[in-house]
Length: 456
Image 1 (cartoon, rainbow, N blue to C red):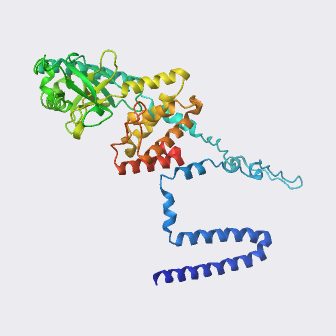
Image 2 (cartoon, one colour):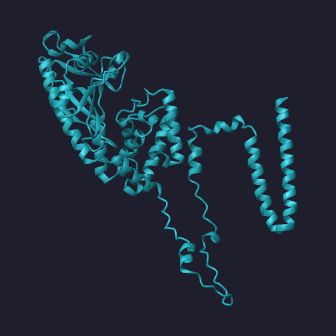
Image 3 (cartoon, rainbow, N blue to C red):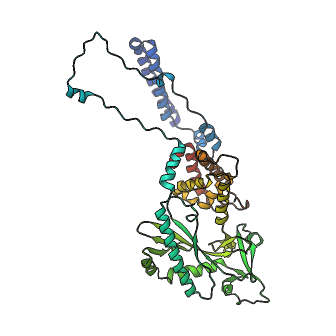
């Protein structure tokens, strides 16, 4: 019944509006002629159609096409070129010269200055997306050199203080030299100097420890490794200072993390160290990682302390003590950053490409959107690496096209909830994402493909 009433009201409204249209057209013929009446009729019918569309309820089928996953529809519409303006509109308008027979009255000087129309300055040219991308790079991606120098100085001083503390607090544990590093040191940090890695290597006895791939353990984790204690029959437990962290015959990253976290939160006199270095240092007790928040009068950044097990002398593999869950809680996570940075550098050196600049742009965009922050440096690096070996131009002139190509690759990966690791395809870098996170990120990137400037 309600639906019938709604249709009746809609029909009456259409009839009333139709009568108004007929009245306007009938009178317009008398005043405007046939041509003017035709133009007025088209405009009036267009308004009527807009009113009908706004007042009619929307079908469910119309909303099904709004999914961000319909990438094919998006790309089909985005490649349509805009129609050029009519030739009549592009022609210059000539000024009408006054008739020579008409008398020209002199105008006072004062009235000339007041009545003379002001010539407007030339309107700014519309920037292309490529130009807008370069402007965004200069304003939101490039870090001031003074900030980089200050962060490196503070990170180096904190590393020396923390190394002295570890040697005095745990003299029996042989830690190597603490070395700060990360994207900021390799020119791969975008926007602000907000994150620095501080590697604390464990000096293990090579004849007492061996590395076991995570797929060979009960956890079946392709990116993790187990550090197994060997030769227990010849060198019983206790011969190595690291035996205190053994769990089931394996060096436990979880036990070591708990010990160091408690020490950093309760035993280190951070106020004294901060006053000595001219900054404020606070351990992040809410995080499961070993994070130190450093606040200076001109900037802030986070120092991530990473316990590292280096590989063999012929292997550049690094294993991190990372807060893992489940059966992998005692395993060590393989650090992909060194190989990722080296691969990007090698690809760019081959063709003087802009892959690292593309990575910085993607990092700068994601850092500016709350929903996109979940895409970390490693995710975006893997996207660039997947695209990096394609036979396409990597010049600065093609940077905008590569940016859009990276967005499209990301949307496709989110649609499948799969981003395979470039170095180990069995590792899905989106495996830890929740469905809600994937939908939020996918919607923003899908909208960004339609209007790329909205992401800048």
